[in-house]
Length: 117
Length: 114
Image (tube, rainbow over all chains, first blue to last red; front, side, top):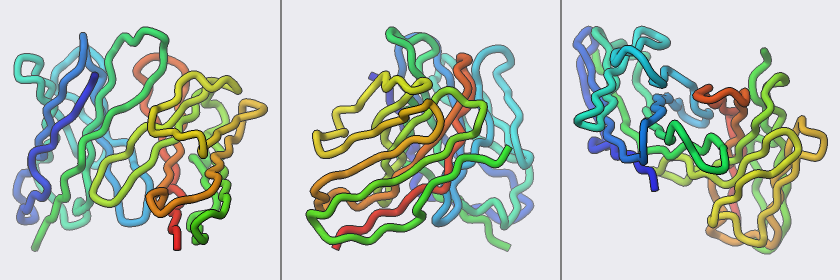
């Protein structure tokens, strides 16, 4: 079974400061990892993914994430937070190779990011 | 690319009624997924299609739930004899068939059971 843990329900950061949203995962074999953002009453917007290659991946809106295989982590980062980054962030995982095919994602419970002036 | 479209955006119904939701995926995407999201939780997988074939169903999908994608384009999710516990946001996503491609989500249908 695959699972994702987002240990912080909420992260508060001042505008202009760096932000980190934490994610750890459990999956059989190599993982595909994803970050999504959700604004109120909206669906999930894709931010970035790790499939293979460089451990540091860059995505939309200045976000990046670092894959750490030994720590089974995929933390989301941004060098300088904006008030408009305030939203709910989800980490998701699937195994790179699934018997029977498919692309089912398993999501964490989400982390509410609040960026204040 | 017009994105994934879901209708209706909101549905309020009485317990015991049947409801049907529609999802129109991104046109070139072969795969279509349904998820359910309750308050304070991440989305939970319900089922997915590759073209018109339903390839996987979650144990969350009771006998009261049925999904179809008859021509490999839009999909419908029907819930029969709705219960209070069915109140949730129902999200549809689509993706290309290639490995590792991201799923793109619609804005969901919020179901409220009175």
